Amino acid sequence: MIGRQRQMRLTQRHVDYLQPECVSDQMPPPPAGMRAATPEDHQATIADLLGSQRHGDELWVFAYGSLIWKPACDFVEMRTALVHGWHRAFCLGWNTRFRGSDENPGLMLALDRGGACNGVLYRLPPDRIDDSMTRLLEREMGWLPSAFPPRWVNARTGERTIRALTFCIDRHSGRYVTGLPPERIAAVLATAVGNRGSMAEYLYATVRHLEEAGIHDPHLWHLQALVAAQIEAAYEPNR
Image (cartoon, rainbow, N blue to C red; front, side, top):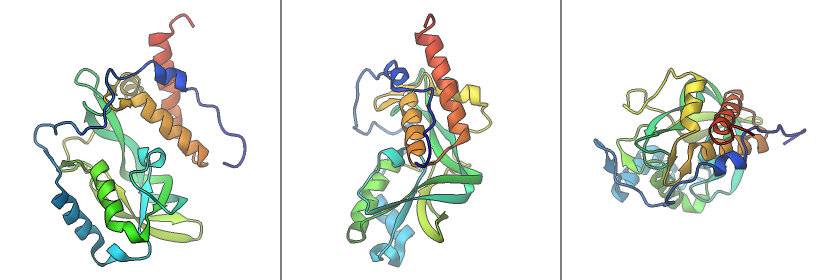
């Protein structure tokens, strides 16, 4: 990043207060009304998305959340980029397994209609497109029907406009959450914990890696300060 990096209020200290009782990477049973995706499902999705491009020289994925700091597959090139017509939002709910519980469900990031989003482009290894795409879909589309299916977007990076795959919220899905004020979102992110960690950790890692990449998201920056304040009020009332 060029220039001095901003100091986040949300820190690892805050994250450490919210630890899962049991950490697991195992895929839990799907919620009611959904089913686990099969290898055949993933192959059908790849065929539908890529068609004849499967063995092309370039396939790019646009990352805007956890894929920035925890890529699902190998990549051979990385660039920052801007996508118009979509914005990063905590609009994917309600997560009661990975980073939430029945008592305190979590909200995950997805791209929603409108505005613009700065993120990171990953170019997949051209000789391992199918394998890389399968691993990506296993991570992002473990259950069907997906609430944030993959789609093509145009990402501007330098002098290039690159056609890239990303994951956008389906506004017709029952998991689409909208209209929450920042204080309500922060209350969710400050309390939700699941078997893969807390929402506070998810927010902390996302904002930190965006800043390290030279990307400042004012909405997430505001949220991280609110979340830190709520965790301090709950765990450090006399600090």
